Amino acid sequence: MSSDTSTYFHVIARLVIIVALLAAAFLPFRRLTEVSDSIIIILGAVVFTLLVFYVVVFQADSLPSIHSESGRLTSYGRGLEYTSVFLFGLGILRYSYLGGIHGQSTHFYIAAALVVGVFGELSFSLYSQAFNLVNLMAYCFEFTSFLILFLALLRQSVAMPLEKLLLTRRVHEKDQTRLELKTKELDEARLRAQAHLDFLAHDVSNIISPIVSYAEMLLVGNDLTPQQRKYADTILKQAQRGGAFVANLRRLADAEAVSPDAFVGIDLGRVLLGMEEVVRSTHPTKTISTTQDLPVDTQAIALGGEHVEGVLYEIMKNAVEDVPEGPVKLSITLRQVRNEHGKRYWQVCITQFDHKFSSETLAEARVIYDPRRGIGRGITSSYSFCSSIVSHFGGRLWIENLPETDKTQNSRVTIELPTADTMMDLLRGDQT
Amino acid sequence: MTARIFIVDDERTVVESLREILVKNGFDILGWAHNGEEAVRKYASFVPPPDIVIMDHGLPAKNGVEAMAEILKLDPSARVLFVSADMNARSSALAGGAVGFILKPFRMRELLATVQTLVRKDAS
Image (cartoon, rainbow over all chains, first blue to last red; front, top):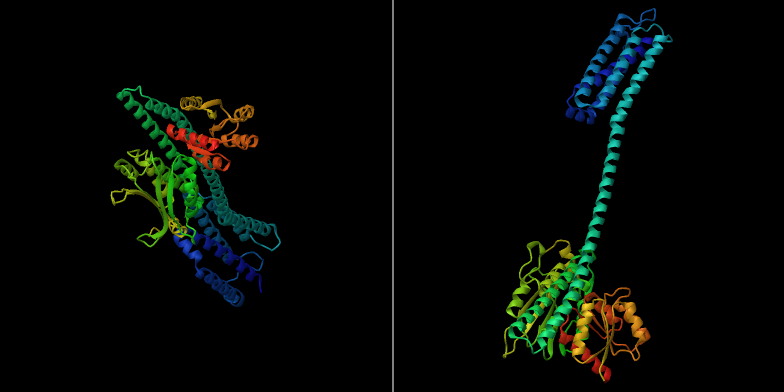
């Protein structure tokens, strides 16, 4: 193997590098991605290398000589070096231009590497022997040129994407922290609002309580004119409406503050069994008689916890307080029903005998309290609020007067609450 | 003998109205207190103790249920009737030994009927 062989390899390698760099610089961006992903590039490189290897090693005699007898390059050898310099020059211009257009420093790094490469090529063109200073400088220039080139590629392909990834992660972490802070602020605001409403409900009730008492004291006296009696009666009723409204609003706010993931189960049968005793304790002067038809062998589990229990208490309380004199007769039934989509619900029917809802109460109960639609008629009806609470837990509530039989009038309050499996379907968004 | 009642409520107007209703209807008001600690202290000083304690829940220093617990410790036969605006206190009050719970704003006849029933039960 002659010295020409190694020089040929060296020169061809540099020519391949600069041609490849120029090709990459002139290819359109999209095409560049496609080409770099293509297997043809790798195969082409392998085939080309084998071809060069074959020609340089086995057909060396057919190639013109690069070195003269004195060891210097022949004019052909210098011609190859100058060709390289020319191509390097083209590369410098093209990459500087691309750097200017895209504003990417990587292009300038490549251009700088090619500038150093030009000095390397010029030094090689002055080659006279292997261990002289010019040859050593040529290798130094070549080393520096490749170092700059590899640093540029490493920066572009590895360092910059990694930096972007880290930046994105930092932004994501900041957003996450900001979100957590906002959620915390919202939770605190909700708790504050709830506390304000608690205070409001408590204090308004305390303020209204003496008004109700004094109005009643005026009404039991005999020294009022009909006009004054009317005024006192209006004060009494309006004060009671105000008190009921605030208490119901607080109850509804308490229920709506419970998110679906915090819904608590309630055994309706057990609650209904104990409800009569609870109402007796809060209305010890009333005579209450109830008949109950509850499932004996099944637990009637619905969601809503103390809020649904509060609704049941409110209905029983209303039933008791709607009868000023005489016994309160109630029938309570609990059974499972299916809706039109086959979903199962627990249905509680509280029937009150010898009782009739006024047309005003019936109309008010149909109004659902919804602050987004503004406050309308019926806001003081506890049935309206109870209905909103029940619907928060996926159920519904309605009141009605039953058809009159044998000159007796009965009324009924019906509550339907989804069974635990139906509630799971509803929470998953399956309404059918 | 006239039933003797002790009123505990932080709202002075409520105390005043309760006092007037009960006095007008023949009950004897033994005294009143405006917070839980004062209620326990005064209850301990009554000889003989009142027949009925009308207790609010949202009291300063010591709430109604806590005050009732201490009163029942001093006198297990004490009869505490809760009259409160706090519906959430109902179950804890009844579980803690209250003989009844009336929600504010209450009707006068409801209060009187409840107190009279408790007095009758006491007498029998």
